[in-house]
Length: 345
Image 1 (cartoon, rainbow, N blue to C red):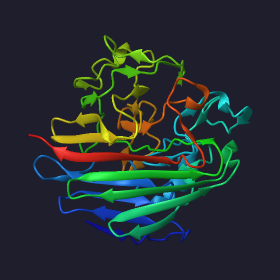
Image 2 (cartoon, rainbow, N blue to C red):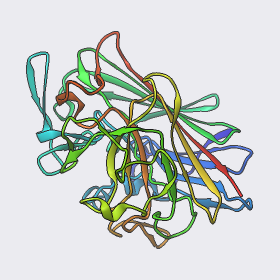
Image 3 (cartoon, rainbow, N blue to C red):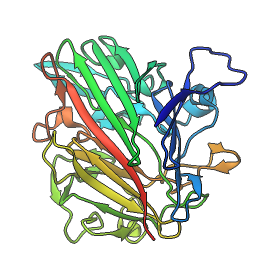
C-alpha cells in the first residue's frame, strides 16, 4: 500500500491538500484535508474493471465553494463535533444549557454551519497511515470545551479502509464523529434502489421530522427490517418520507469492532461491508440529492448514493436512555469504522 500527496493545479489556497491511498488490489482512495473528506473511492468490479463508487469532486477546492456550501450534502466529509441532529440546537449538560448554531430548520446538524466538514485539517503521512488533526476550541459552534481531534485513514491489501477517530476534551462535551461518504456500487450513473442491503440491527430509533422520539423500537414487521437482504427501493414507498434517513441500533457491544451492515450490487458484483465499534448507524438513501452537484458531467440526483454513517444516536445529549456520547477528561472518543470492499459473481 502506498500514499502520495497529489499535485493540485491552479490552486488559490496552498493550504489545501489532496492525497491518494492505493493498494495492490486495484483499489484507490483520495482524501482532502478539507473536512478530512473522502473525494474518491475506486474499486474493481467482479470482472476486474475499476470504477468510481463514491460521490465527490475531483477538485478539492470545490468543497469550499459558495455553490457547494450553500446546498451542502456533506459528500465524504468527517462531520462533528456532533454528527446528525440535536433538537432545537440545545442540550443541558451538568446543569448548564448550551445553545448551538442551527442549520437544519430549528435543529443543529453535523456540527453546525461551520462544522468540521469545512475546516482545513493538519495532515501528515505516518508510515502506511494518513493522519488528520484538528483543534476545536471552547464554544466552537456553541459547544463547551477544547477538543483535539485526530482522524486516520489506512487502506489495507485486504481492501479495508480503516478509519480511526480519536478526540480528547478538557471538559465534558458531546462528541460524535462519522464519515458521510455516499456509495453507488454500480460504478456508473444511476440510482441505488436496486442495491441490496443488510443491517445487523434488531431495533431502530423512530423519529418525528428526523428527531428521535426516544423510543427504541423493534424493526420486525416494518420496512426497517434489514436483518436479511432487501433491495433499498423494495419497501421505500411504505415510509412517510419515501426515503430511509434513520438511525439503527446495532446488534453489537459498543467498543468491540463488529460487522454492522452489508450492501451489494448484482450487475457489478461489488460488495461493501461495514464494521464499527459505535452503537448506531444512520442509513440514508440519498433522497435529498437534487442534481445541483456533479463530477465530470454526472449530476448527483435523488437516490444516486447511499450512506452508512456509524455514530452515536441522533439527539443523544437530550435522551438519557441513549448510549452516552459525552467525552470528558479521561474518557476520549475512541472509535473505529472499517469499509471493506470485495466482489461476488
